[in-house]
Length: 323
Image: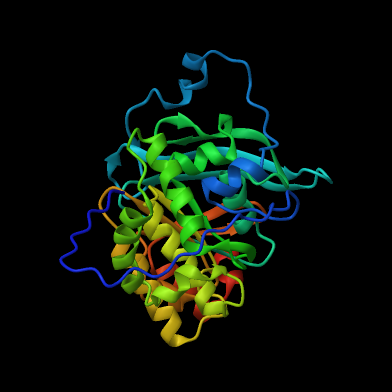
């Protein structure tokens, strides 16, 4: 998602102290940004030594149907995905099928423990999970053969339920390094500090954040709402092709929810897509989904329009399971 910024007059630049980031722990932390992914993570899925032509055989068909009668080229296509917890080998995903096209908003709903968050973490290559079967094609490439940082650089973004603090690393340094990593991947020149500030400054208004947030350490001392806004700021900066938002509405008051929803809607284009994981209809009233998927026991058991959320709110998941 390309962003073009026109600045007529920029405010005085804040003083950005030079710092040496502290080493980041390699265990228990996972971030969707290339800066951290490249140093902290390696996927537990071992790429096969197949030739490139064979590894792309799953995407030879140029079009796919999204279930609503439209035939388009998919942005993300998941077929029969199965996965286990790497340490215990407990199976969590038991055959997930999903197709997301450009410009669509998909919502996944389901009971706690149904596999919603695991599904999103598997897509970004979280090391706690191991893929045991199925295929995932993203932008025409085999996603499962990519390392986590490669998936991020390819345009995949994930916002977590509880964003983690990174002491000693301020927001603007963190975001500049991540953004420049993606520009390098796209063959574009990196931005210097002043150029990057001019790029990021207009995006602060989108998420209703003040400039002093840029000089604060990543999520350190942030409230729940500030952390969620900061996640959406990361999304706005990186311009992902597919953003996965895992319970972005959890812990938000009415005003914060409105700000976050407004920002997400403002980032949508006909070329990028959003996958939302949520329990609540209230978020889907402000971010209108193309379709809603119900997940149960590691599978998507039903797909429909926004009326599914109404059924859930009125009758609960028993009504869906029995249908």
